[in-house]
Amino acid sequence: MYEFFSPTKIIFGEGCASETVPRIREMGATKVLIVTGKSSTASSQGFKDLCKGLDAAGIQWVHFAEVGADPETSTVDKGAEVYRANDCNAIIGFGGGSPIDCAKGIAASIGEGRPIRDFVGTGLAFTKPVPPLVAIPTTAGTGTEVTNAAVFTIVDERGHRSKKGTSSQFYFPRLAIVDPLLHMSMPPSLTAATGMDALTHAIEAFVSRFHTPVSDMYCLEAVRRIGRSLRAACGISAVSDASADTSMNGASGWSRPWPGKRNSSSFCNGSADSRCGRKALDNWRSTHRRTRHKSARSSSRYCAPRQRYRYTGESRSCRGTAAIF
View 1 (spheres, rainbow, N blue to C red):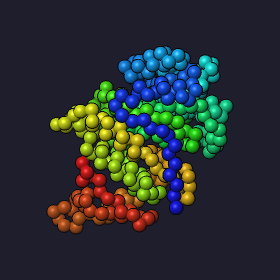
View 2: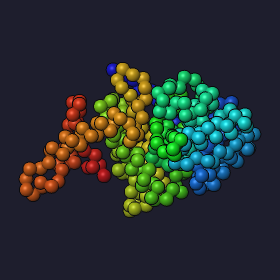
View 3: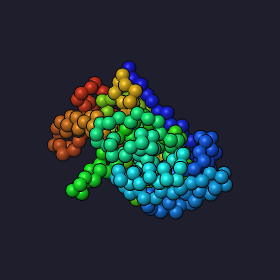
View 4: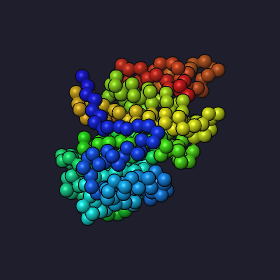
């Protein structure tokens, strides 16, 4: 028995960012906090179009642009203060994984009425609903726009920094606007890095001991699309067009729908920090090393990727994905 829970409504397609304002209005929002990073995303044409659309609809907005990579809990607290001081009633996370994670943290902090630090690395559970949350990703890597997880950085009194993941059913954005046109301005290096991030998520989820037929379906399709499109999206293939970015956008989200344990309704995050996925990969690699070719000709190489391997802990085949590329 297993359960699959993914409540986020997804609007996908070229130009679909124009749907953001009408959908925000349907949620009853009158003043929106827009969370972005400090990079060029905040000055992009897509961000400007969003702000113009909100102005035209008579929806006020406040811009919070202090998010760095793996946002610190103190940054989340600042964003929550801005939200309260301006009487906002909805949140938009616009950018890569970090701004959207920060938006999730702000929403949770507002809903609970206490600092996000109380919940990061403490085991304390979120119990209260959050304000309307909309995620607009501009990279195709983390897939956080459709997950119940967020990663934050804790800085202790000695200045030591550590990343901690949190999860909650209330972290799921109410709406994800996935517009490939917002990704067209990404440099090839960032496209490649985020694409490999999505590929890692898909493979890790596929070899997890907690896999289900539903998660297998998403993971395999994500790997196929990334293998077919990543080179073109980076501009290093003979074919490079918007369709490659569109395919990468879809693969990013599909690489993340992990059901949790069987007999549980939890939604297990497919990040590299996921304990279940990491253990599964370690077990598979251990078995993989013991299946080297015995012949002198290939004694220094692993078996061909099309061979079927089994990793310990469960009777499940780990099909080689290298052949897809």
